[in-house]
Amino acid sequence: MIPGSFDYLRPTTIGEAVSALAESGEDAKVLAGGQSLMPLLRLRLALPEVLVDLDHVAELREIRDTGDSVFIGAMATHHQVIKDPLVRAHAPLIAQATATVADPAVRHRGTLGGSLAHADPAGDLPAVILALDGVLIAQSAHGPREIPAADFFEDYLTSALEPAELLLGVRIPKLGTGWGFHYEKFHRTAQAWAIVGVACGVRRANGAIEECRVALTNMGPAPVRAHEVERALLGRVATQNAFKAAAAHAAEGTAPTGDLHGSAEYREHLARVLTARALTTAAGI
Amino acid sequence: MPRIKVEVDGVTYEDDVEPRLLLVHYLRDRLGKVGTPVGCDTTNCGACTVLMDGMSVKSCSVLAVQADTHDITTIEGLRINGALHPMQEAFHSEHGLQCGYCTPGMIMASIDLLRENPDPSDEEIREGLEGNLCRCTGYQNIVRAVRSAAHEMSHSEVTSHD
Ligand SMILES: Cc1cc2nc3c(=O)[nH]c(=O)nc-3n(C[C@H](O)[C@H](O)[C@H](O)COP(=O)(O)OP(=O)(O)OC[C@H]3O[C@@H](n4cnc5c(N)ncnc54)[C@H](O)[C@@H]3O)c2cc1C
Ligand code: FES
Ligand code: FES
Image (cartoon, rainbow over all chains, first blue to last red; front, side):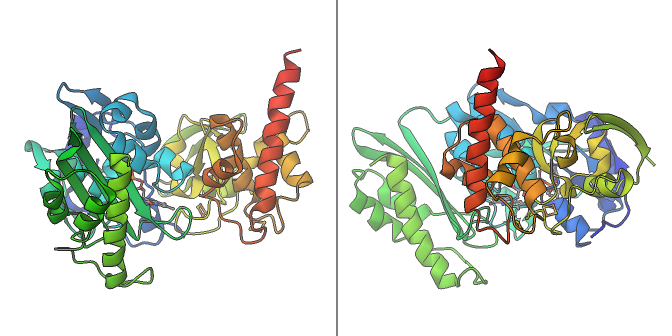
C-alpha cells in the first residue's frame, strides 16, 4: 500500500532536527531507519503530517568512548553496532543481541535509537539496555534530559519520550573485568521476533558470583529486570544447579500476555528455562 | 516536491518525487524497472531487495527521497556486457527458483551476502537470506545456487589475476 501524504524535512544537525520537531508539534514523526515506521505508514496505521528524517544528521551515528562509558548515537544502524570495536569491547551483549535482530537488509537501515524509541515489548534491545543500566539521552527545545533505562520503557509501544523530544543516543557504563554476557532468544522461525528473550551478565570473582543482571524481553508490556533471580545468585558458586534454582524465580513479578505464539503460562515457562540457559552460557560453564 | 538525483543501474536520473513515494514504486512506475517486485506490506518478504551503495535494503521500506545522492543496483543492472551475473547463472543452473517471484530479491541479497562473506557455509547462507521468503522451492536449491556462485566467483577472481 501507499502511505498517506506528509511533508518531509531533512535536517542535517541535531539543532535543526529539534527545531523541526518543536515547530511541527504533535503531528510530526521522526523517521530513523524506517524499518518499523515504514510498514506502519504503508498500512496507514500511522498518518503523520510531517516526517523528520534523521538520515542526514551525521552526528547521531557516532559511537564514542566517553571514559567510563560508551555512547552510542541513536542513528547507529544495527549493522554498524554489530561491527563496532568499542561496542564489541565494552558492551559485547549489545553486539551479540543485535545480531539476532531481523535480517541483514533490515539491519542495514534499522537503528538502535529507533528500536528503543519504538519500545516494542518483543524488541530485543530494550531488555539488553535495561540489563546494562544504560542511560538514554533525549533533547527537546527545552534542553537535554537523561532517562535511566529503568524509567524509559513505560508501556506497550510507549517510551518516556515526549512527542517533540529527540532521542540522541544511549550511554552504556563500562563494566570492568570478570563479566560474561549472553542474550538468549526463543523464536520459532528465522527472522521472527522473540517469543521470550533473556539478556544477562554475570561477574565472578574466585568462582563466586559477585554481581548479576537479568532482564526479560516480551514478559509484559515493557522489559523487566528479574531481580529475584539476581538476588538468589549473589555470593553463590556458579554451577548449573545454582543457575537452575535461581532461574525458577524468573517469571516472578512479570505480566506476560498470551497471543498466537504462546500462552502467558508458556511464556513463564520459557522465561525460567531460557534464564537458566542464558546464565550458564554467560558464565561459560 | 523534492527533487532527487539518483544513480540506478549505472544511469543518473533527476526527478521530482512526492515524499511518500516508495523507492520500489519509483523504480517500477517511474523508471520502468519492473524487475523488482513487491511481495508484502510489512517489510518481511524481501522480494523488493535492491543494493543501496552496495548494501542490501528492502526498497519498499525506503522512500525515494531517501535514495537521493545514492547509488542503486537492481536485478536489471547485473548483466555485464550482455552476460548474466554469476549469481543469476547459478540460480538458473541449480534450479534455485520455481515461480520466480522471490528470485530478484534472493539474488540481490545473495550478492550482498558474498560481499560480506565470500565463502559462506550452508548455515551462513541460510542466515544471510533469512529476510527473503520463498513460497516454492523449500530453499534447498537456493542454498546450492549461492554455494555454486561463491565457488564460481572466487574462481573467476583468481583467474582474472592471471
Ligand atoms: C522483518 C522485520 C523483523 C524484525 N525483527 C526484529 C527482531 O527480531 N528484534 C527486534 O528488536 N527488532 C526487530 N525488527 C525491528 C527493527 O529492529 C527496527 O529497526 C526497529 O524496531 C526500529 O528502528 P528504526 O531505526 O527502523 O526506526 P523507525 O522505524 O524509523 O522508527 C520507529 C519509531 O521510533 C521513533 N524514533 C526513531 N528514532 C527516534 C529518535 N532518535 N528520537 C525519537 N523518536 C525516534 C519513530 O518516530 C517511530 O515511531 C524487525 C523489523 C522488521 C521489518
Ligand atoms: S515487498 Fe516485502 S519486504 Fe519489500
Ligand atoms: S520461487 Fe516462487 S517464491 Fe521463490
